[in-house]
Structure formats: structure tokens, C-alpha cells
Length: 106
Image 1: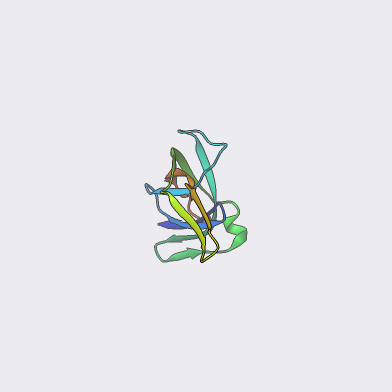
Image 2: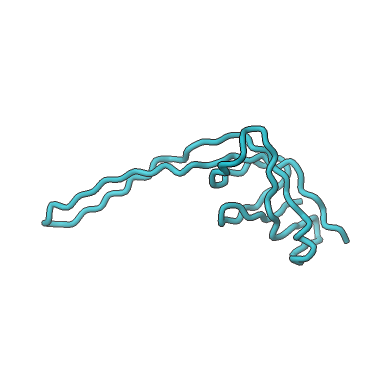
């Protein structure tokens, strides 16, 4: 059984026990439980995509860690003008461990 969930404008395929890296959830602390909105649930042969049914299904996950991603170097350069700019970025992430995916009521 797996589900497609939405978090931070992105979609993730999750199953129970998976650890998913999502954009930082600033309100959650390590050990807290968060709920993710569900877009699709696949349980064996049964596929649930009805928005009315999925409105009641929330995937539960536990916050495992807050960390930063890999460093991204941004370089801007224009030839023959002496223009050079260097900038770096490290995206902040939250690691979530999926604990439960409720099944759709039939």
C-alpha cells in the first residue's frame, strides 16, 4: 500500500516506514506527528482518487530530523565587463517517517 501526498508544493510517493525529505516544516519539532494531505491511495488493486473520499484520509508521519541540503553554488558572470557575482544556497529540509496510511472507506 502506498499513497501520493502533497507537502510544500511538491508531491511524494510514500509507504508505511518510508523516510521522506520535505521542505522545512517550521512549526513541527522533532518527535511531533504531522498530517499530510493525500492525492491518491493505492491498496493492492484498489486505486482511490476521488477527492471526496480522500478529504477524510490524512497520512500520519513523525518528524525525525531538521537538516540542510547540499550546497548549491550560483555564479553570475558577464564576459569583458568585469561583472562577477558569487552566491550560495542550502535548502532546509525536514525528514518525516511515515507511520500510518489509513485505508479508504468503501
